[in-house]
Amino acid sequence: MINFNGKLVAETNVISLENRGYKYGDAIFETLKVVHGKIFFWEDHYFRLMASMRIMRMEIPMDFTMEFLEAEVLKTINTNGLAKSSARVRINVDRGEGGKYRPISKTISYTMVAEALPSSFYELSTAKPYLVDLYKDFYVAPGLLSTLKTNNKAINVLGSIYAEENDFDNCLLLNTNKNVVEALNGNIFLVKGEHIKTPPLEDGCLKGIMRKQIIEVIANSGDYMVEEASISPFELQKADELFITNVIVGIQPILTYRKKEFSTSLTADILKRLNTKLRLAQL
Image (cartoon, rainbow, N blue to C red; front, side):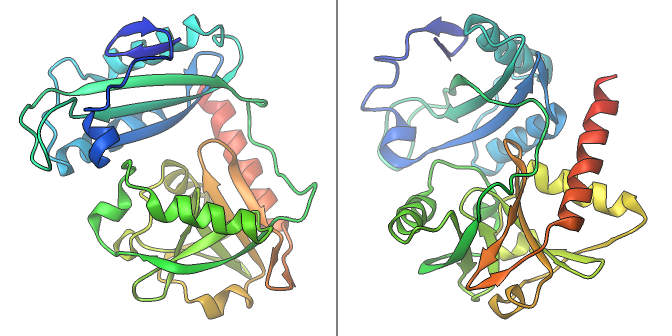
Protein backbone atom coordinates (compact mmCIF):
# COMPACT_ATOMS: atom_id res chain seq x y z
CA MET A 1 0.00 0.00 0.00
CA ILE A 2 1.15 3.53 -0.75
CA ASN A 3 0.17 6.84 0.77
CA PHE A 4 -1.41 9.07 -1.87
CA ASN A 5 -2.28 12.50 -0.49
CA GLY A 6 -3.03 10.98 2.90
CA LYS A 7 -5.07 8.03 1.59
CA LEU A 8 -3.68 4.49 1.72
CA VAL A 9 -4.29 2.87 -1.67
CA ALA A 10 -3.02 0.01 -3.80
CA GLU A 11 0.10 0.68 -5.85
CA THR A 12 -1.71 0.59 -9.22
CA ASN A 13 -3.56 3.39 -11.02
CA VAL A 14 -2.35 6.16 -8.71
CA ILE A 15 -0.44 8.55 -10.98
CA SER A 16 -2.14 9.67 -14.20
CA LEU A 17 -0.39 10.33 -17.51
CA GLU A 18 -1.04 14.05 -16.92
CA ASN A 19 0.91 14.14 -13.67
CA ARG A 20 3.54 16.89 -13.91
CA GLY A 21 6.18 14.81 -12.15
CA TYR A 22 5.72 12.12 -14.79
CA LYS A 23 5.48 14.47 -17.80
CA TYR A 24 8.11 17.09 -16.96
CA GLY A 25 10.02 15.91 -13.90
CA ASP A 26 8.27 18.73 -12.02
CA ALA A 27 8.74 16.99 -8.68
CA ILE A 28 11.12 16.65 -5.75
CA PHE A 29 11.66 13.77 -3.37
CA GLU A 30 13.18 12.71 -0.07
CA THR A 31 14.51 9.25 0.73
CA LEU A 32 14.21 8.33 4.42
CA LYS A 33 15.55 5.53 6.57
CA VAL A 34 13.06 4.55 9.28
CA VAL A 35 14.07 2.11 12.01
CA HIS A 36 11.49 0.79 14.51
CA GLY A 37 9.31 3.83 13.91
CA LYS A 38 12.18 6.32 14.24
CA ILE A 39 12.98 8.47 11.17
CA PHE A 40 16.72 9.05 11.00
CA PHE A 41 17.59 12.77 10.71
CA TRP A 42 13.93 13.70 10.24
CA GLU A 43 14.38 17.39 11.05
CA ASP A 44 17.12 17.72 8.40
CA HIS A 45 14.98 15.91 5.83
CA TYR A 46 11.96 18.08 6.58
CA PHE A 47 13.78 21.39 6.28
CA ARG A 48 15.53 20.28 3.08
CA LEU A 49 12.13 19.35 1.64
CA MET A 50 10.67 22.74 2.55
CA ALA A 51 13.69 24.57 1.14
CA SER A 52 13.50 22.55 -2.08
CA MET A 53 9.80 23.33 -2.49
CA ARG A 54 10.53 27.05 -2.11
CA ILE A 55 13.36 26.93 -4.65
CA MET A 56 11.04 25.08 -7.07
CA ARG A 57 8.40 27.79 -6.39
CA MET A 58 5.90 25.24 -5.10
CA GLU A 59 3.20 26.58 -2.81
CA ILE A 60 3.64 24.81 0.53
CA PRO A 61 0.27 23.67 1.99
CA MET A 62 -0.52 24.98 5.46
CA ASP A 63 -0.79 21.44 6.85
CA PHE A 64 2.71 20.45 5.64
CA THR A 65 4.11 20.69 9.16
CA MET A 66 6.89 18.49 10.46
CA GLU A 67 4.43 16.70 12.74
CA PHE A 68 1.88 16.10 9.97
CA LEU A 69 4.36 14.62 7.49
CA GLU A 70 6.02 12.50 10.19
CA ALA A 71 2.61 11.05 11.10
CA GLU A 72 1.94 10.28 7.42
CA VAL A 73 5.31 8.52 7.10
CA LEU A 74 4.61 6.38 10.18
CA LYS A 75 1.09 5.63 8.93
CA THR A 76 2.61 4.34 5.70
CA ILE A 77 5.15 2.26 7.62
CA ASN A 78 2.52 0.75 9.91
CA THR A 79 0.17 -0.14 7.06
CA ASN A 80 2.95 -2.06 5.32
CA GLY A 81 3.87 -4.02 8.47
CA LEU A 82 7.24 -2.30 8.89
CA ALA A 83 6.74 -0.58 12.25
CA LYS A 84 9.14 -2.93 14.07
CA SER A 85 11.79 -3.26 11.38
CA SER A 86 13.96 -1.12 9.11
CA ALA A 87 12.43 0.55 6.08
CA ARG A 88 13.13 2.90 3.22
CA VAL A 89 10.48 5.53 2.53
CA ARG A 90 10.36 7.79 -0.50
CA ILE A 91 8.32 10.99 -0.26
CA ASN A 92 7.52 12.40 -3.69
CA VAL A 93 6.04 15.91 -4.00
CA ASP A 94 4.75 17.29 -7.31
CA ARG A 95 2.43 19.96 -8.69
CA GLY A 96 -0.35 17.57 -9.61
CA GLU A 97 -1.82 17.74 -13.11
CA GLY A 98 -2.34 20.34 -15.79
CA GLY A 99 -0.49 22.81 -17.94
CA LYS A 100 2.47 22.49 -20.23
CA TYR A 101 5.79 23.77 -18.93
CA ARG A 102 3.88 26.42 -17.02
CA PRO A 103 1.65 24.88 -14.35
CA ILE A 104 -1.96 26.06 -14.28
CA SER A 105 -2.65 25.06 -10.69
CA LYS A 106 -0.94 25.65 -7.35
CA THR A 107 -2.16 22.32 -6.02
CA ILE A 108 0.49 20.13 -4.40
CA SER A 109 0.30 16.34 -4.51
CA TYR A 110 2.40 13.79 -2.63
CA THR A 111 3.02 10.08 -2.43
CA MET A 112 4.86 7.93 0.11
CA VAL A 113 6.19 4.48 -0.73
CA ALA A 114 7.78 2.12 1.81
CA GLU A 115 9.94 -0.97 1.40
CA ALA A 116 11.86 -3.17 3.82
CA LEU A 117 15.59 -2.75 4.45
CA PRO A 118 17.88 -5.57 5.67
CA SER A 119 19.65 -3.76 8.52
CA SER A 120 18.95 -1.13 11.16
CA PHE A 121 22.27 0.57 11.83
CA TYR A 122 25.02 1.18 9.31
CA GLU A 123 27.60 -1.45 8.46
CA LEU A 124 30.88 -1.22 6.54
CA SER A 125 30.53 -3.18 3.30
CA THR A 126 33.93 -4.57 2.27
CA ALA A 127 32.94 -8.14 1.42
CA LYS A 128 33.65 -7.63 -2.28
CA PRO A 129 35.73 -5.17 -4.31
CA TYR A 130 33.81 -1.93 -4.79
CA LEU A 131 35.02 -0.65 -8.12
CA VAL A 132 34.29 2.84 -9.47
CA ASP A 133 35.33 4.99 -12.42
CA LEU A 134 34.50 8.40 -13.84
CA TYR A 135 31.38 8.92 -15.94
CA LYS A 136 32.29 11.47 -18.61
CA ASP A 137 29.53 11.28 -21.22
CA PHE A 138 27.58 14.11 -19.58
CA TYR A 139 28.36 16.68 -16.88
CA VAL A 140 26.58 18.18 -13.90
CA ALA A 141 25.93 21.94 -14.05
CA PRO A 142 27.22 23.80 -10.99
CA GLY A 143 24.47 25.73 -9.25
CA LEU A 144 21.53 25.58 -6.90
CA LEU A 145 19.24 23.30 -8.94
CA SER A 146 21.85 20.54 -9.00
CA THR A 147 21.87 20.42 -5.19
CA LEU A 148 18.16 19.45 -5.07
CA LYS A 149 16.63 15.97 -5.14
CA THR A 150 14.38 16.46 -8.15
CA ASN A 151 12.94 13.88 -10.53
CA ASN A 152 15.32 15.16 -13.23
CA LYS A 153 17.95 12.43 -12.88
CA ALA A 154 18.89 11.64 -16.49
CA ILE A 155 22.65 11.76 -15.79
CA ASN A 156 22.27 9.36 -12.87
CA VAL A 157 20.20 6.97 -14.97
CA LEU A 158 22.65 7.00 -17.89
CA GLY A 159 25.62 6.74 -15.54
CA SER A 160 24.06 3.70 -13.86
CA ILE A 161 23.59 1.99 -17.22
CA TYR A 162 27.19 2.81 -18.11
CA ALA A 163 28.39 1.36 -14.79
CA GLU A 164 26.46 -1.88 -15.36
CA GLU A 165 27.78 -2.22 -18.91
CA ASN A 166 31.36 -1.86 -17.69
CA ASP A 167 31.08 -3.94 -14.48
CA PHE A 168 31.55 -0.96 -12.16
CA ASP A 169 29.78 -0.81 -8.81
CA ASN A 170 29.37 2.94 -9.12
CA CYS A 171 30.56 5.95 -11.07
CA LEU A 172 31.71 9.42 -10.09
CA LEU A 173 30.13 12.42 -11.78
CA LEU A 174 31.99 15.51 -12.99
CA ASN A 175 30.68 19.03 -13.32
CA THR A 176 31.23 21.26 -16.33
CA ASN A 177 34.44 22.51 -14.72
CA LYS A 178 35.69 18.89 -14.78
CA ASN A 179 35.75 18.58 -11.00
CA VAL A 180 34.43 15.49 -9.19
CA VAL A 181 31.10 16.37 -7.56
CA GLU A 182 29.46 13.15 -6.35
CA ALA A 183 28.75 9.50 -7.00
CA LEU A 184 25.66 8.26 -8.83
CA ASN A 185 23.84 7.67 -5.55
CA GLY A 186 25.54 9.80 -2.93
CA ASN A 187 28.14 12.33 -1.92
CA ILE A 188 31.88 11.67 -2.21
CA PHE A 189 34.58 12.14 0.45
CA LEU A 190 38.34 11.95 -0.12
CA VAL A 191 40.79 11.09 2.67
CA LYS A 192 44.47 12.04 2.63
CA GLY A 193 46.19 11.47 5.96
CA GLU A 194 43.94 13.05 8.58
CA HIS A 195 42.57 15.58 6.09
CA ILE A 196 39.15 14.88 4.55
CA LYS A 197 37.65 16.73 1.57
CA THR A 198 34.18 16.79 0.05
CA PRO A 199 33.01 18.98 -2.84
CA PRO A 200 31.22 22.24 -1.93
CA LEU A 201 27.57 22.74 -2.83
CA GLU A 202 28.63 25.45 -5.28
CA ASP A 203 30.21 22.73 -7.44
CA GLY A 204 26.76 21.19 -7.98
CA CYS A 205 26.78 18.24 -5.58
CA LEU A 206 23.62 17.07 -3.85
CA LYS A 207 22.87 18.77 -0.54
CA GLY A 208 22.95 15.36 1.12
CA ILE A 209 21.54 14.68 4.57
CA MET A 210 24.23 12.09 5.29
CA ARG A 211 26.83 14.47 3.89
CA LYS A 212 25.84 16.96 6.58
CA GLN A 213 25.96 14.30 9.29
CA ILE A 214 29.41 13.09 8.25
CA ILE A 215 30.80 16.63 8.13
CA GLU A 216 29.52 17.17 11.69
CA VAL A 217 30.95 13.85 12.91
CA ILE A 218 34.37 14.67 11.43
CA ALA A 219 34.33 18.26 12.72
CA ASN A 220 33.44 17.10 16.24
CA SER A 221 35.91 14.21 16.30
CA GLY A 222 38.90 16.26 17.35
CA ASP A 223 41.07 13.87 15.35
CA TYR A 224 40.41 14.83 11.74
CA MET A 225 40.04 17.98 9.66
CA VAL A 226 37.25 18.36 7.12
CA GLU A 227 37.22 20.78 4.19
CA GLU A 228 34.58 21.58 1.58
CA ALA A 229 36.69 22.13 -1.53
CA SER A 230 36.72 21.14 -5.20
CA ILE A 231 38.21 17.74 -6.00
CA SER A 232 40.18 17.23 -9.19
CA PRO A 233 40.08 13.78 -10.83
CA PHE A 234 43.90 13.74 -10.46
CA GLU A 235 43.50 13.73 -6.67
CA LEU A 236 41.57 10.46 -6.62
CA GLN A 237 44.52 8.14 -7.20
CA LYS A 238 46.61 10.04 -4.65
CA ALA A 239 44.01 9.56 -1.90
CA ASP A 240 44.40 7.11 0.99
CA GLU A 241 40.67 6.42 1.17
CA LEU A 242 37.51 7.32 -0.74
CA PHE A 243 33.96 6.81 0.43
CA ILE A 244 30.38 7.53 -0.66
CA THR A 245 27.58 8.58 1.69
CA ASN A 246 23.79 8.44 1.63
CA VAL A 247 21.11 7.89 4.28
CA ILE A 248 20.31 4.33 3.24
CA VAL A 249 23.79 2.71 3.33
CA GLY A 250 25.47 5.31 5.54
CA ILE A 251 29.03 5.02 4.27
CA GLN A 252 30.18 2.92 1.32
CA PRO A 253 33.97 2.70 1.00
CA ILE A 254 35.44 2.73 -2.51
CA LEU A 255 38.00 -0.06 -2.66
CA THR A 256 39.30 0.26 -6.22
CA TYR A 257 39.62 3.10 -8.72
CA ARG A 258 41.66 2.56 -11.89
CA LYS A 259 43.85 -0.16 -10.35
CA LYS A 260 44.45 1.92 -7.20
CA GLU A 261 43.31 0.09 -4.07
CA PHE A 262 42.26 2.03 -0.98
CA SER A 263 42.30 1.28 2.73
CA THR A 264 39.26 1.72 4.99
CA SER A 265 40.63 2.33 8.50
CA LEU A 266 39.61 5.98 8.83
CA THR A 267 36.33 5.30 7.03
CA ALA A 268 35.53 2.54 9.53
CA ASP A 269 36.28 4.89 12.44
CA ILE A 270 33.95 7.58 11.08
CA LEU A 271 31.19 5.00 10.58
CA LYS A 272 31.63 3.83 14.17
CA ARG A 273 31.27 7.42 15.40
CA LEU A 274 28.17 7.89 13.24
CA ASN A 275 26.48 4.80 14.71
CA THR A 276 27.37 5.99 18.22
CA LYS A 277 25.71 9.32 17.47
CA LEU A 278 22.58 7.54 16.24
CA ARG A 279 22.36 5.28 19.30
CA LEU A 280 22.71 8.25 21.65
CA ALA A 281 19.99 10.09 19.73
CA GLN A 282 17.60 7.16 20.26
CA LEU A 283 18.07 7.03 24.05
